[in-house]
Picture 1 (cartoon, rainbow, N blue to C red):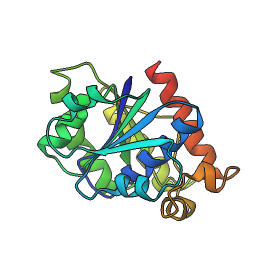
Picture 2: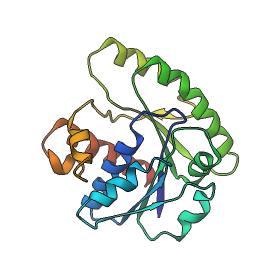
Picture 3: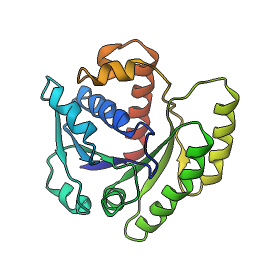
Picture 4: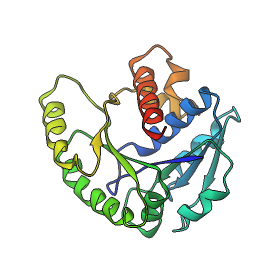
Length: 208
């Protein structure tokens, strides 16, 4: 079993959307997947509740015992949707991970917040060897801001390398979630679906 934690100490970066779409990608690949919703808002748990298919498991763990409790789960991949603030539970989610993905929006505010999240990662690494990656979410290619944020994130390369995958800003992400579906199911030939597939393939190459 491998554990992927998606989290950032700054909220509003799209971590739940990414967690749910990755879970769908895992299920489509024929693997057993469980989402651990570690956010008190419960967005990933709500997604599971409205999803008709039983191909994705989901549990809520909002206590600082995530790194212990996940050992009892039966899955090929566990995806932890970590809360969007620094807390004991958030830190437990980081320690739980084999791969820690830090989603970041292409904005200066998100860039500044990344240093705080990397600081938490440094502390977690005193307990466990954790691979980490930065992931640009809601990416708009060809813009000055997109170019600038890519260059700026190189500052954190020694802590978390930048993933090659980019998740585009697409309305289909919102439309899919309210139906309990991933973008690969809603619009299988669209740019969003291709981006999620690229992200999943990259993750598998890292953890294997």
